[in-house]
Length: 389
Image (cartoon, rainbow, N blue to C red; front, side, top):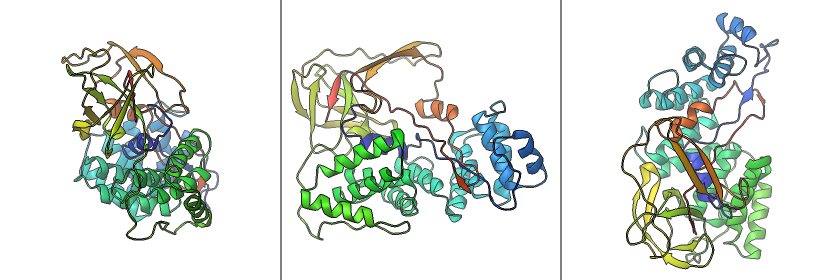
């Protein structure tokens, strides 16, 4: 992905569940002596009936930290913690059922445990269930419900959800398109993030700022600065305002696949675009196009072609384990790349990118008493040869 504006990219990553949750490690009264990274100590406390210790032991097994990675053991302890009312355990158990970690995939059970965690006000569960509504996985597709859940988590003070809400307002997914609210939520989220996360949020904030006049930007900045957890945000645009002018909303990459120059890209790059502008990798050819077909479930879209460039040969046979594979694109630059990146490797799983990566970097919540900084992100898929905006 080209990273000049990454709102759609981050929205897709977050609501597809590909951005790991922040872990919060327990240290509350009544659990003195608990060391969240000590499997022997946690096991003794868990076997004595402590649900916080049980959940934290499950986190160690899920992540392979100080113990061999064992999703079955993780699920066992998440279930114990959940049955004893531990909110983090409820979220983790739902995630295990959603992704088939230590158990068969069971969407009804995943939804049930996410709802249980939501009843205990777990923001990560709201965002994860929202991702299911956004994609229609395990529940009917409902972008409005996805936005409602994300907004609830954002109002709760969950920075990742705040950035998700920014992308939803920028793209008009489940909520009316509104750059002022996109700016406010991204600004609030960025102020609570560090490192690469802060870079993401800042890029999204700056994207939204492009749609605001200097006076409007000052209003949005003041509103974001005055926000307090638990509060909602209001648009700075009066009710009944005319539509805002078309502007650059995001960018991505693609490759020519059709005989008439049709281009394949990710659906999340062009979900609600009024027009799509094409530029070749050398910057010598330009054209304007539109979406002619899409597959939202697999995040793919086909654009009408411009009849310049070389067609990529696409095979129809399935990919096999161990095959060599090469990708070229702009993965979240300039955060991860400022120019095209060429990456080679081999196919290590055929269950799909999300399933493969979720097994290697599982988002888990330890019982939330003391916030701790463990989070990770995964690069979005990048397609080759074309910049799309």
